Image: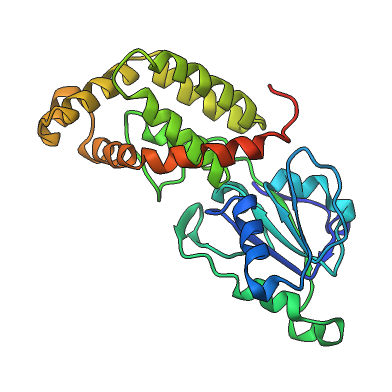
Length: 288
């Protein structure tokens, strides 16, 4: 059952948008490097911030960051919130700029489109009727038990992985995938990677539902034979064995094994964004 917050406590904005594929830093860089936005002031707000300046565009690195600065928002601002699609679904009046929510918790991603953001910025107070102000409305969902079925699923570990990453913004999702794939590589380095993954989950999984999902993911990966199965399967694929044979021999669905193999091929891209992720986390306070 959804419970809506008191509308009187929510600010009115010039525009409210959300992104599930871009990090706050991605959005801010775009705004500051494209000429049509050059005349507008912009600022990024991270989870540890409790205030913001009075500028044209506020970019929030997460939904929690938006909540933290609510008292400083006003109807002359356009706000863009970056977070996981499941979390952004709670932003009832937000307009997605890079995804559709077809029904329930099924999402379709698309190329980022800032057209509506620009239109909202150009609207003057005299022409406000052409683009009505938006009241920020947050709906709190009980996300325990919700499974996002559109992106990936599987009986071994993908369902658990998908549930954890559905809360994250783009950089955190990328970092989780990078650590997950690193665990599957040959050698003893996986023990060090496991420690990094543990610290990552402790830092990023903050709300009770997310912590619970992360614990389920961790326990299934490390307290069963799941990791051993995955490492063995990936090693066999690297040796050139047929994926159908490897799937049957290790009792891993073909879909799941194929998805993980494709994810593994993109590990260099994931690694390239590690520095950006580290930059984002500098402002995060209080490790759990």
